[in-house]
Image 1 (spheres, rainbow, N blue to C red):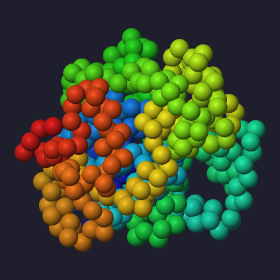
Image 2: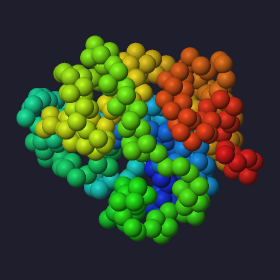
Image 3: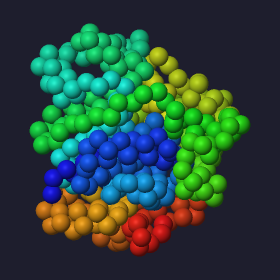
Image 4: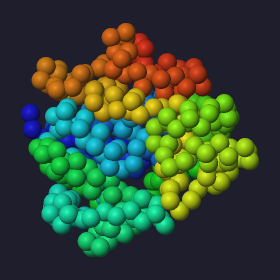
Length: 371
């Protein structure tokens, strides 16, 4: 079977812009199978998904995706390069031959990455600014404009993963025009920072679930973070993944004078670290994530199925015997070790909403069951 298309998403939450993106893929490229790798209950910028992974995956399948695979926490809550590395590794393993993504600039990403690799950009960290700004400046010297273009940056990261790992995947793009459907705007409205409704921005299924769900945010978990920091020694905090350069001391100091998470972020912020970088570190600290737990997932990745339709099911049946990674459709005792980090981080979500996220939960199949 040819025409196996894949893309990477967070669907946080699934909105009408995502539906339009899926429709454009099908109209422009006519895929035989469309596969999405989707972040689980935590997302890249160090936040909590506003809807749990099962509901988001179900809605994606209802609106045209054939198969949804979970991007594990170890990759999902990472900067662009590592986020992309994990996502493309899983998509390559499941057998896609085309990657498609949205971008602000329609360029040949594979050619661009090849030129970057050939030019051997000598990245030198300027400690008067954060890594992201520094990287943008470095790329600018090669005539590559990434400022204010997060989708282009991710696309470049996806293409780099394909080139560097010699994956047999072609790259296709959908040009993004404007930002009528913004996930961040929807989340802003949901958090009551705006009086505007989200009803015209999301499909009915998303709206219904958002109305039914208990929305979680840093407001929900800040006290837990505060407790973890206050009751841990600096030596213990040093063991947290990505806790570097004395940040454990700053965390200990500034948590004492910060009444809210936003205030804490403001207090620990500096030119050296982006807001997203510090939010991710806060997630690691909240969940007590260690280096070895992240590395274990990197060394032993897996394919966790969240949802599919009949096309996706047929495709899985055809390829499952030839997969180079373990395929997980149901979590039991045998999967405890392989998914230990995911089970750990999802337990906090389960404590909050009372909905089991792993044990005994089976993938949603369109027309066969409900999440």
